[in-house]
Length: 106
Image (cartoon, rainbow, N blue to C red; front, top):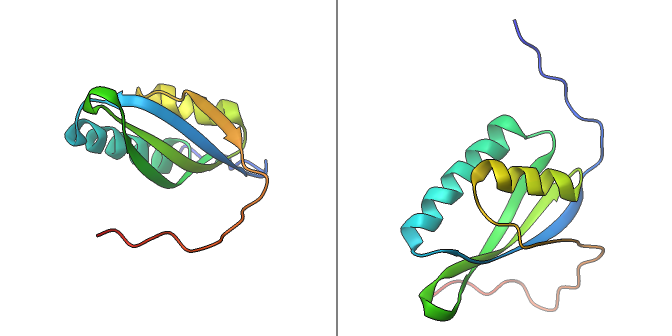
């Protein structure tokens, strides 16, 4: 029986920018499914996807700004590589200032 060793490295929170990553919502949905599977099944001790905001770019391409918890920026980049999606910028979040809660989607 194979045992999995859990990481004892504390997780920090990161914002990941993925500009122009997908041509359609269907492509984004497919990538999100793979991302969740890899994060939950293969890297759960190093990466946790918290939320994403979908952005529209020139030519109608879609991107995302994602919030993850991870043991390191390298773990975030490895997750992106395994999924086959960009990780244009990985930036540590050092504090949160909430003026208003996220608006409800219409």
